[in-house]
Image (cartoon, rainbow, N blue to C red; front, top):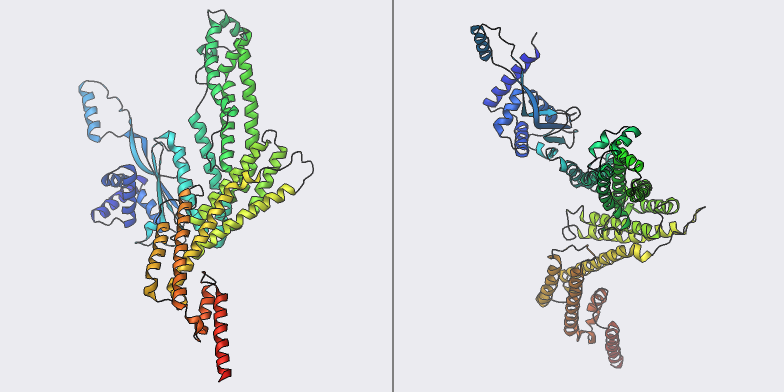
Length: 615
């Protein structure tokens, strides 16, 4: 029966024969190119690794050709490898030992560290080098030879730069996978039941996961505040050791110098709670939650450091010596306790918002109203129950953050995740999106009013804040959307009128100059590189006013041409032929006073009737 080593050897020889005959599968070649690009290995080096461990090729075949495979991961990192002694070297060593009349010593196995490329599942061996992963986007269909690249997502995790590993994982999930999944949900790409699960279950979990990574990253960057302990504190185990140490010269002063260093570092952390926070204008509720989670984690880490044996023994020793510095330390210790309790309490209450707030990050404006109602109800509960997050300033600021996120979600919805602009989408679809966002603004205000006016038993605080402060930005955003709708309406209107030659009232050559003016005005707007949805961008407002001015000029010229061309028609029997066109055109642009035209027609036909009756 063939041993495991013999089977592997056969596979190696078979893989090498295939490589020599050029029979390496295109999927293998694709994988090799990706690994080479991400790891820096040369092609022949990757091939050597695959020949030395031919099960890699089996794993690749399973990924690309099996219906049950979803992922494959390669590690390229240092591993301990036993250096095998060749038979020739072993014989020489044995012969040399006999010549010297000594018994040959048993050869010791030599272990070296060497970079190895291997397939791993990520559950047993820790990543210390580079991890390269391949993920199939779907296992429901067989991968085609020419299209398999489109069905594979790949990426890299670099654990060699430990300080950036959390950052890399968080950015990869939040900037690549969440937008891709969200885009699939927005475009209804796939089974409806699966899309609902992705939006309601998977995406919220991914958002919470990336939020935890951001918090961990913030705490990681902060590091430990108490980095040094007195070496003598490690030797103190009980009071007898304390009294014995205090007999040494400058013992108290030595410990006090360490305490001063601790207090200096701690003071900087505590000042964050006593100073105004610097926040971005578009911070959302998740940012508020992450701030308090990170703050609570930092203070928890600090409390753990203070409770370590060397830190406790340092403080016990100074208490025994009745050091005056303990008065300052006790004050700092009380502040640590106060802010630690505050951060933990705020994080707990704000955590109640997280589950309901997923929808204002993920849902479309048309389906967001009910979620906003739930979020505002939770905010009201926090305002009345929390011992710390209960000031009008904090709660109003939280409501503004909710508004900021609603605006951001509207922008994402309009631009399809930033992949499109208002100009390269179907015009009617864009107008529909803008209208949904405007309706959401009113729905948001209605939800706030309902929660505000609904009285619940044992309410100790009135839930009433400045609506201008809370909704002011959303109102400004909707004003911008209304201007965009007005702009689209005018562009659509004049495009139709020029196409129809003003209800076939003016010849094309007469309209040529006016059409050029109109087309130039539209081009000025469409070719700008600013964000049309940024309501704080005043450049659009100036361009919009200029556009309206130019359109008024075009309208006046068209009106003058119509009046001049058809001025004599209203005194002739032909007026009935043109009147319906003017009436239809007057619904879109001013075409002079129709009442005057009616009077001239009546007078003309009265005179004609009189003439006929007199003959």
